[in-house]
Length: 316
Image: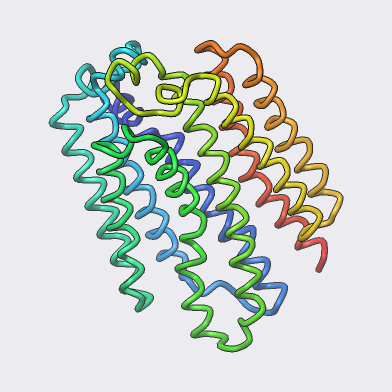
């Protein structure tokens, strides 16, 4: 049981649950009700959708395993009490888990792509697994590049569902899908942009928290290269941009009371609190608290999908 607990920590099981839930919610709470409101329905069979979610989760699990494998030395400085690879799990086994999860993800991704006759989509999984490898070995040590890659890959998670659904919808409904294509893509891009920004902020915040180990092992993070003050200002600035974009999204697209209250209470207030924390004197506990707060903001973004489902159902 202790070993199983260590393995689940290695592959960051709470993050894997969030990845799966984000895809399920986008499919069930956004795409499905929007299609139903136009007299259509989702075309990806449930079992293939489950395989798509499985592929995404497996690729992510492999990425987490290889990341911990290559971070062993830095983690001894940054998180000595949380080391998994080298203390609870043998490094060779961690590499084997990376290979197993990644191959499983590539197989499932290719299988779903073949089944919907869009094999080119499987290239996404090969590209992502390659990026995760090079992120762990090289990119995460380069200035901002690692942060942007992680944020982009997080943003891709919800968008994958639309990418796999749209070809099937085009086959089933043809030209009737015209205006709805734009609506589905806009919603998916909205959630992806939100995920990108919040994760980019969180990556810089986590770099602030891990400053000592990163500096000792030559990682070129924002806090190491430009200093703690710059990291705080950039993170706070991105949080303010996210708040402004939420306000614009409400003004331009979803002007209902539920959204206004949700955006303000669940998203804007915690983001405002992160700005407040970042503008003060930041110690390791403050960076850690800010990181946790941003994770709650991410979960709040997922919760909005449920709110959208209720809004759409009440409209019809």
